[in-house]
Amino acid sequence: EIRFCDWSSDVCSSDLSLAAQLMERYKEYIAYQLKTLRWGLYYKLWEYFSPMPAGEQLQLLNKVREWAGVPEMQRPEFLCLTSSQIKDLTDSKLFNTGGHTASHLMLSNYNKETQYQEILGNKLLLEQIAGKKIDLFAYPSGKYNASSIEVLKQLNFDAAFTTNAKTVKNDSDPFTLGRFQVNNWTGDELKKMLLKWSDQ
Image 1 (cartoon, rainbow, N blue to C red):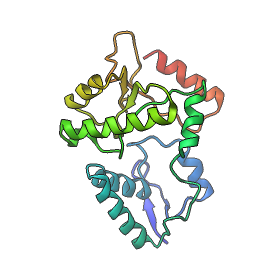
Image 2 (tube, rainbow, N blue to C red):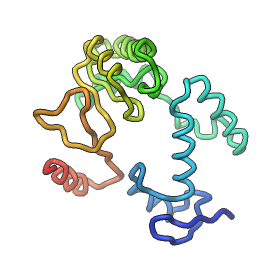
Image 3 (tube, rainbow, N blue to C red):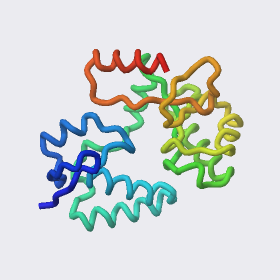
Image 4 (spheres, rainbow, N blue to C red):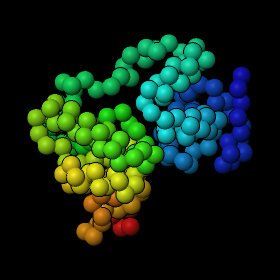
């Protein structure tokens, strides 16, 4: 059995599988704060993989699966959205659909031309599926640079979101908007957090 020490409280516990107790604890997961072996491994892999081109990422992910003895289709319900599902989302009044690059590149690691192709390719595909203009964007992993913003303006995007936890205000830069992470909360808990964020 693998055991770990919780870096935040020094309490040791099993981290081999997501048992009910661990699942309950992970409901409060906040990126960059939860410290367990599972979190630590995930974060190190994310740091290592994120700057790579998509093809290299897929090759290494296959190696990780082989090492872990996990079949590629072990969880077939965890798949990318189909074109039909994307169309359903874009048709709904509850959602705004935004761009996110063709292959989830960490934009700040690439030159302007590569960023342009990644952003344009995704925008054209989404607009073809949705049958409407895509003018919002979210930076993959929240990473961007001056070239990213230039490309978005060239391609007529209206706004873009980072992963910085900050409130959107009247004077906020539309191309560096903040977002807050929403966890597995009840309606009352979400209402409480919305009020808290609106006061920041």
